[in-house]
Length: 460
Image (cartoon, rainbow, N blue to C red):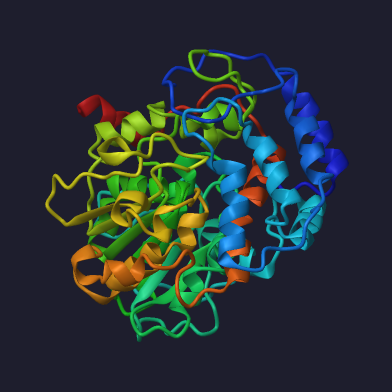
């Protein structure tokens, strides 16, 4: 649902805030630095406050300047309880890391894409070489619940795409984002003209704030479709945030796609959900069952939600294809925990397909690249760009052994990207926050599992 004005958004949010609250199990305590500092703050007033906020400084002019501003907003002590997430977003806009023209545009559309690269109604007339709908031919996949027209329209294929002459890569965005917007200032820059990857991206209607099981259908369909129009070449998948969780769900319950994917690179994923989900909806926090109305996919990303539990019960806690994960241990403002082997981004390798889990701070310890990187900033981390390149250029997952870590970890922003690219990347968290607050409909209970997921959970 795209909202046409700020007034209509606030009216709808006001109605949503009047809904009764209900119990929602599956939330664990966290090391979150965020709390609801003003208990009476409602979602509509917070949204209005953010949309009325303007930059008070010039844009960052260097990588050091950007790092310093972000660290002062989000860094601090990871065990602190003095930072409110949306206060941080407001401060980031003040610090001119929110891209003012984007914020202006978002006032008009709120949840919808603000640039053509995020368009959700794409025309893709090519038909795959074998049937893939309502499920892939000769597969045990469940039928899609969304129409084929809707699934296909979410795939944006640039005019430069070579349909298999170069290895296809599908980019999957995060919560509150569209693929073109999320990746344009970082990974798309690296893949532009690269021999090892030819990118298309998913722009899922509703910015992945709708039901996550349906979000995963877009992934499963896109893999079969892009492979099917590219001479049955394998594709690779690169994700940010919820995109990684949706991909892993698609691997788990649409087994046909596992054999069509060469590599999966996940940036800041939450394979185990996040203990910060309630804070993002301005609910009271750890130790409570009080849930403010929230987009469906955010509730489903709560730590040990029914969605997450079903995924892990069905084997989704381990990789199905060569997988590389990258995450920030100390400063992720969206996903917790993100430390060591208990990190939500950490994925197992019980199937022996090859996995590389990369925690930025420990891998680049003692260097500039071990400093502040939040949830979005991992998209321009030099390790991310180096391992995307490495994974797509070799069989198996990305390998730290093939990298010169002294060189890779010597810069804050990956080579090939500018300070402006990094600022635009960091700004993605601002638009995601606004969309999260503006999205309708809002729920107080987690959606029920689809029958195929329920059946798999009962078998485990």
